[in-house]
Length: 175
Image (cartoon, rainbow, N blue to C red; front, side, top):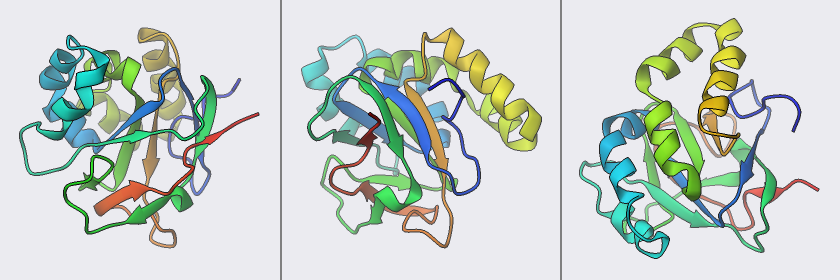
């Protein structure tokens, strides 16, 4: 993972690192709005965090997915790795309203919630030249590329706004 591939780039999949078998799936506006709550959750034991994430305030669900056959390292995720769902109670289900989902290593939730704020995200969206430089800046701030952002595409299963979950066996380890 020499190039920064954590951010939307057309229909290309994203690549990111995972140190935990649990990934958080969250709309960037929810990540910004619940930043303090998400950071506070990280003071609790990791075994309690999934349940705490499920009862966060607001009407949009935040998902937590366990990676199958996990081992720490680099992972890839694309728009075809998602599926729409009507499930409301599943911990894996998440809602998207901005057309984008953030994928976050649970071990990096605190630093991501602190660093990936709406103002920065908005700057990234407004300038293709700023995308990589802001992304590199954020990655340095929290010690590695333990997150990614993927934008919906109407020609794929992850179209943007809606309720989703990851397909089984996603994300995919990169050899």
